[in-house]
Length: 100
Image 1 (spheres, rainbow, N blue to C red):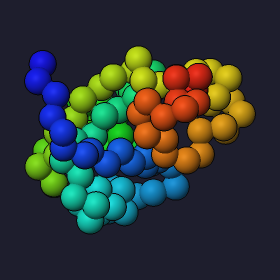
Image 2 (image 1 turned 90 degrees about the vertical axis):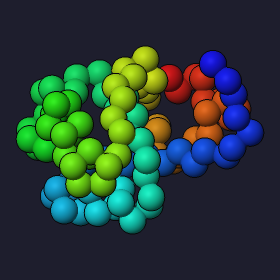
Image 3 (image 1 turned 180 degrees about the vertical axis):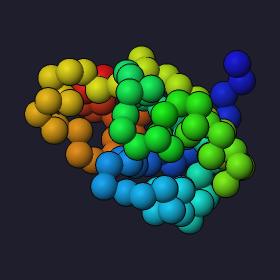
């Protein structure tokens, strides 16, 4: 794998309390090129458009956005239950590894 010196912005986005138009609109407005889904269970959510296969389809169709599922990056159970992860951290920043 070749590493690049290109800076990559990492954002977080939730889908709860958002309709599909708001969710996909925010991704498009931000110029997102790839969504990395870190959910442990990406098939069990109530919002149909966020289920793995549907999300992959809509991202590609609506915004030509790639989709990758990497559950290894999901926050630890302790972090999820306390709501600690409320800001976007730069991968590798101090404290990041303790959250995942």
